Length: 433
Image (cartoon, rainbow, N blue to C red; front, side):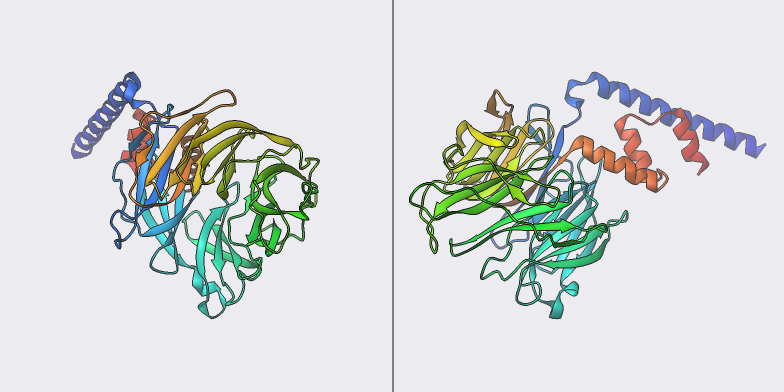
């Protein structure tokens, strides 16, 4: 008797849950304001001078307009950020940790774990200046300054499903006081080779090439870049910055100079093609590579389509047409004169760029025929430090893969309900657990 009553009660409860979920799903579908965001935007900042950092989280609409995600700002004392699947990693600002956070389906962050990267450096030397991932999000890399007490190095970590990091190795990038690496690598579409340009006052300079081994560890690739002949009156080009597309092309910003010492001449941007061994060469010449209006480059990113190149730094932000192996061509003038230090594209033709000196986040919608600032942009951000972008579809794919690996239990059930994919049979299955 009691068993029958209990079974009826469970059935009634489960049907009520399912009915509410379906009603909520219908309301969300009917509400224009419930349209799914196209990306999640994360910005570390210092809200008050001397205080710990926070991470500001936003969801971006199809127009590029931003809305804070629930729970933002998140109390997370991190500086440089990197998105990796459905996780966000940051360099802790007060300890030698790489902090890991889960990204929920609504963009919210939950702290997961911290890894002490200094444990893997000789004598505990070095400090992390950048953290970034490969193209697939399988591995995470941390650039350590003086990682072996003398040279800069890229540490390699495998990202486990639990979000914990497994140390893979360290690739030396030379002495920082000479031509040692000091920026994140930019990876080719094959995810095998990565590049970084170093320029130390036009006295020490180099285009570095690293290779990902089969297990994801970064090692010196033994590759090089053959730069074109400089304009008359200069002895050579010096590479300042690199950015790669999703195939085998790398944009390199170069300045003509007579080293030692820089010339102050306009920086030009050329397109290089990687061969099967990762070596870079170009057919671009000093007469067809466009000069840019940015006097000092802090960041350079190629759009997911491979057709646009954003260049930011001292002087503002500029967009060029990227034409595969052919020379880039000028497109926009300066979109802003705010000094831009870091930026990222999403998968829906939006570019997000931060300016610490101006205390702003700029958002633009940019196609090959039109560019404009998004509604509500620029957004005031007190002392922004770094930015990371996770396109929603990539976040959902990573989240679904993570749920599948854990059997889809717990928080995954609630996330499915919130997304409108929770049905009557799911309620029965949940009650049986």
